[in-house]
Length: 282
Image (cartoon, rainbow, N blue to C red; front, side):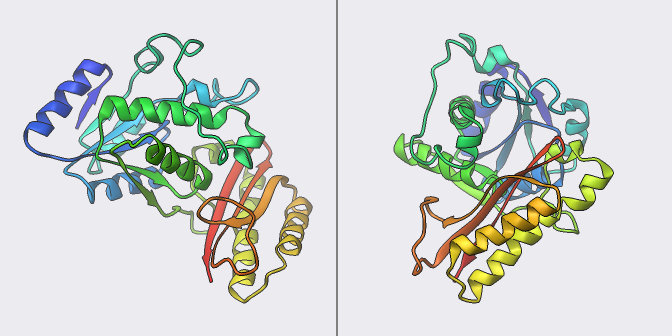
């Protein structure tokens, strides 16, 4: 498995693969890899002969009071984990490689509408940072496909919109959320949980699943379902940012006849910000 840090090294390997008519898939990560990331790599291999995994903690998607400085970084461990996968190349650039004119003078990509609610409202500027860095990684890697996790449901919708709007020749593939045995969605930020908080954390998925079951059973009082779930999570010690039932395609408010729904939530538990969702087709 190759490990490169510069644009030139990356371009040389991509060009060699292209000469052999090989397709390239990208898995964009911020490192601190867990089995959920490794599943993305497996899925990427199904769509391309070559898989690039980028490892870059992107400063522009963190707010002023967020955890950029303490976000877990473990490149050597990540390399060892990826050696057991189908990854062909790790691209681990520094900030100057991704943002050659600096982050303050960087050209940005913004997707209006989809980024205004939920994580976009809770983290102003976050999605501009996400779309900007993903667009830059697409420019550097020139992938045919890119794989993202369903756990970040709003994010993958935003990236899909960006790709369609800008006619980027990249197929966006969504991988199902990978979970612990007790249902907790895998996340690098789970390391922030204390032992007591870790025991409570699966309650978020339980609340989402319970609402999903109610929807499957024909319940259509969306606001009441949201209210009950919020109350349960608050009682368990979560600080709920949002818990909402929306149209799966665009996160708009659904009517009673909507068949494709997503129940999505974000909540703080100690120092960990947990996000999760359940997709429901009725």
